[in-house]
Length: 220
Image 1: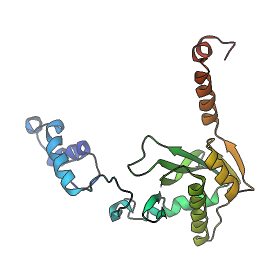
Image 2: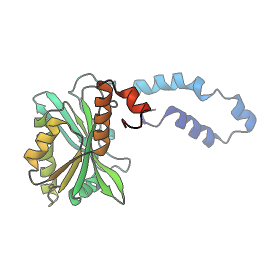
Image 3: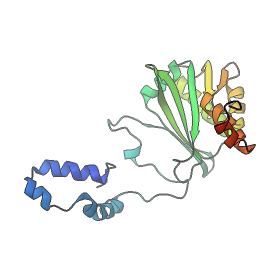
């Protein structure tokens, strides 16, 4: 019960292993009836959701399922405050440092307690956008992005590589733009088309033109 597999999947797998007859399977309680007791048993063995930024990451969450290193960085910007955690494998780091173009974006709806955003880095590989780093950040300040960039540069040095992308694509966050200009002054920096369209749409709504934009082709 200490594993992270969903309870429904555990139930289905155990039923399949039992090789029950149709009558025997029909007599068993459903997963909905089992879920409450199974959830209680799991909560006794798993970590409590933390509200503080000071905590130790169990080894289970430091490795991939193949037991390869996944926790790349774990540090504080200030003593006992502003925790930063970065997840990435060695293979993902090779992809990052070998690509000339990177795509970066922040997500806020899925961020865990104690952090401000999930900051992800992607590269284009095999004709698709491939995630290479997942960063839990405590804020959206330029100083944080600068420190993160420098630590990635250090990781590149340890791998006898350089972290010097030729092209960065991001949203229009001012702090991020400032950090990229400082750390990668020779790098071409482009705004993401999706975020540009999103900004234009927000402005249309702000100006009270939403209905006209939707209904009048000439305005569109």
